[in-house]
Image (cartoon, rainbow, N blue to C red; front, side):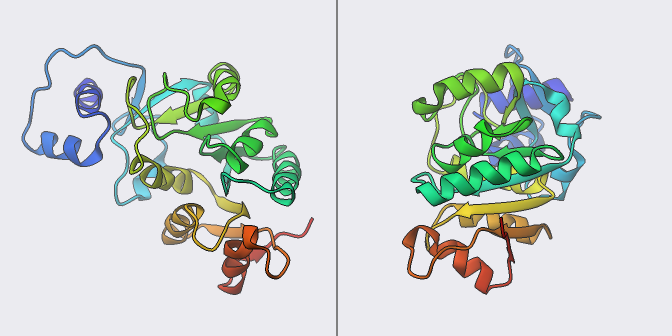
Length: 232
């Protein structure tokens, strides 16, 4: 069964709905070469992912898979990070990194800062492991593959697509015990992760911003709605 899942994931470029349809039809994907992967039928598949409406059938991975067994906190925020958001992310990642694995999305900005300032960290991708997107994080990708962990629903060769990123955010939300938002504008992709986390009953912690600071309007809105405030 696990080999079938991996081959279907490769054939359909990680598309959850196409894999599900193929399973219902009992489709034979043929003798597609396998890739290193963790499947939903494996004993070491993270059980928290089963809480999702659409738990990933397959996770391709590279690095230290044992990190998935440890407690995680997600740190998320804007790609266009401001100095205040960067400093807050650095301090928080270093502070909680002694106790938790930090999970984030390998984007430029807040995600990259969180990964770079964590002792143990997991990156969740919206593309194949062989594609370093964004390329400005090329060195971080190489470091993560050797010393940390990268996971993705998408097999080798799968290019980043706009729709991949909000869908991958559900994995970050499920893996984390808590979600920390260090920078978010009023309309931000970060909010997709927050919404997923709230649906799963996760606690949300937010860095407050000065009144009128557009970089943090989303953060202040979350606080207004009941999120916990982080005071450093």
